[in-house]
Amino acid sequence: MAYKVGRCLLRYRLQERSMTQQELANIMGVTVQQINKYVRNKQKMSIEVAGNIALILKCRIEDLYEWIESGRNE
Image 1 (tube, rainbow, N blue to C red):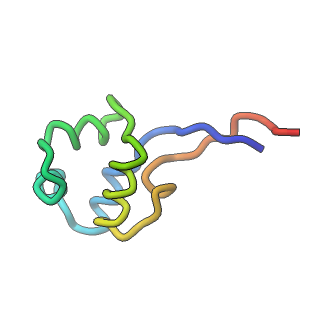
Image 2 (image 1 turned 180 degrees about the vertical axis):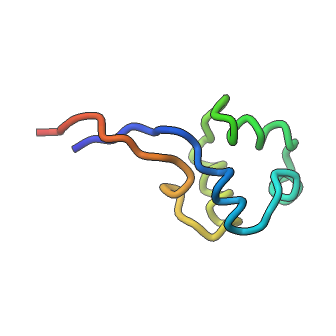
């Protein structure tokens, strides 16, 4: 079974941690506009960015996106 990346769940992960986009941006040293691009699904995170965000939010990289079944690997 294979999966593809769906919508970004960063907004919900931030809410769970009671953290704002601005706070995350400050910790990461990026602009709030960049974080907002991820939240609004305008840009996908690189694996490096996703890994760092996951560490900050104390979640798994997989928790940052919805995963959609896309077919079978047989």
